[in-house]
Image 1 (cartoon, one colour):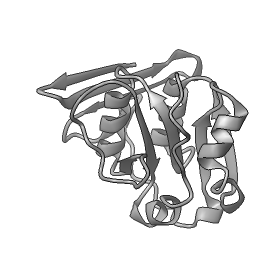
Image 2 (cartoon, one colour):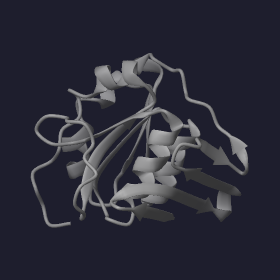
Image 3 (cartoon, one colour):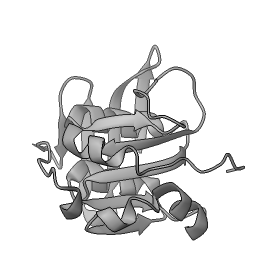
Image 4 (cartoon, helix red, strand yellow):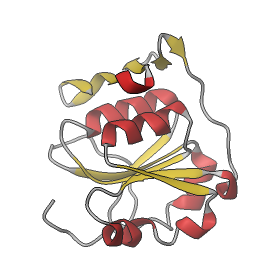
Length: 166
């Protein structure tokens, strides 16, 4: 995973998954390619037909606090132990919803730019869900959805767990 920023703005992102033989690349304003081919936005708008990807690395209980209300409303859920694979699953369209708690400062610029260039909705998770803020650094928790219709259905079902040492 590689993300480059210029004046706090992500401008380039690359995710390479050799085991899946996939490489995702984006430049600000140029869309996202998978193995050199431009990929197009996912049009799924039915929450009941959507899949979620999230990380189970920091424990099942913590994950359930974050997405427990969302799980009964969706078709299924994928859990991974790698934020890189999770981000690529969302960007590729294999899943329509991604939720992360505490992506590192080297991960969130890449995820943000890939989602933005893919035409997806991205927002930070706090007590309310504001527009994603690029200022500052450190860990970020956020939600990515395939489109505005899914975002409106999901945003009130996802909760940020209490602050914990990560």
